[in-house]
Length: 92
Image 1: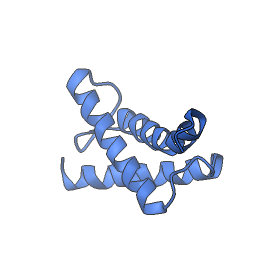
Image 2: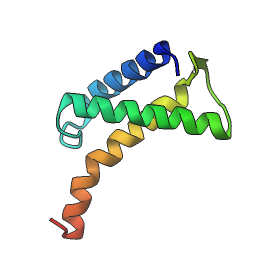
Image 3: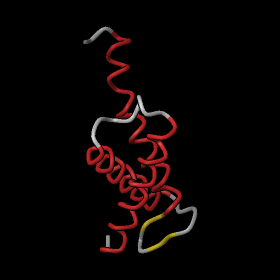
């Protein structure tokens, strides 16, 4: 991954954190930096998985944008609802 790819993923993570916090603030993981870091990891994994299997959507600086956005959003959402799942299962 290039430096440009790093900053593209960072911008996607910041944008999705902002949008997610405006839509459902209670589900977002606590802390801005934690959420952005989780989004970056999700975007990286989404782009990596897309590159391994099949490429779809535009690619900029080695980052598949569609897969990065989907991976970022899913990673933040899944890790954001993890505490609620623990409560529902009675493990708290």
